[in-house]
Image 1: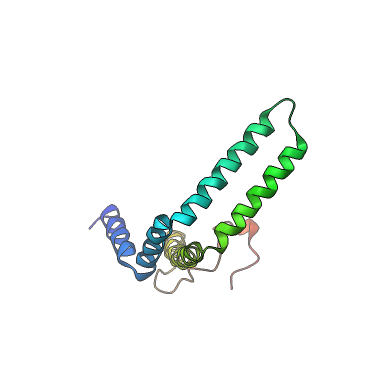
Image 2: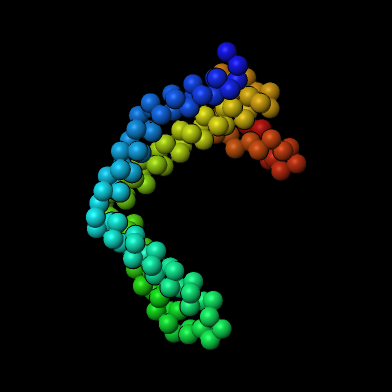
Length: 134
């Protein structure tokens, strides 16, 4: 089996992992939430209005402040939505697992033993920025 085939198998295994399944389920539930979808649409519309106003030569700073305030309010509502909270929590768990997988691969490519390497050591592979191996 070559490395590309192993990588494809790893990708398939990631998609069967509980953390991935939970993230995708939470994502789908979030996408089906009409209230959340409307909030996100309103947020994006407000963001475009801010970009438009900011690009004008005679930009109205008071209008910019009002638009920014409204956009921040929409963002807060989005982040307080229970489906968005569930999605963010599930995505964070999956991202942590994915970072561990990537850490093992990266550390192994640097010569570490793949069975004992610490996938979350934060090693960048550059000794010039390192505070020492632990």
